[in-house]
Structure formats: structure tokens, C-alpha cells
Image (cartoon, rainbow, N blue to C red; front, top):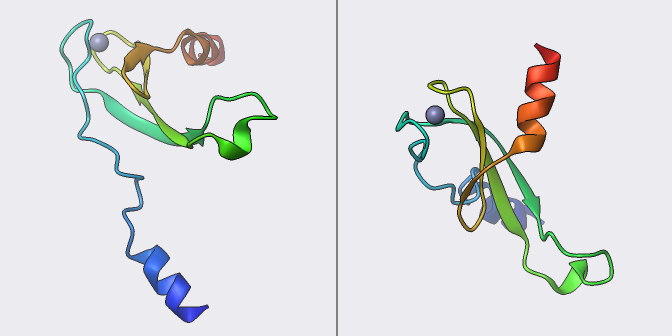
Length: 86
Ligand SMILES: [Zn+2]
């Protein structure tokens, strides 16, 4: 148990998150918000699917929300949520 805990603590805390990418819209370096791990699979497949961390970013230049999984994509869901909360 102790050995297991020690191994876990030595792993990177950010799930191997790459360096903050630049905004494809305006070139500003994006601000990291959070990482969510999800397979993106339907429930019956989830156990056997690889868990893919999705990194979420905000752009301070053009105020767009982005998510980085296999590639950097705009995230309209978070965009709408953020605009509504404003
Ligand atoms: Zn931008």
C-alpha cells in the first residue's frame, strides 16, 4: 500500500498535459482551466476504452473557450455557459 502510494505521487499531476497551445483564432497563448478524463464512449464500451484526458483552455485574446483532446477544438458548450454566467 505504501509502495503504491509512493508510485502514484511520483507521476505527473497534470496527466502529461502539453505546453499551453496558442489560440488558432488570434495567436494568444491559451490559459489552462482544467483537465477532464473521459473515454467519450457509450456506457457499455467505457470499461474497455482508453481514458483520454481532455484539457480545457480559455483565450484571453478573443474570449473563446477551447478543448484539447486529440486536437484543439472550440468548445461552444463552455463558451455559452461562460457567456450566460457573465
Ligand atoms: Zn483567441
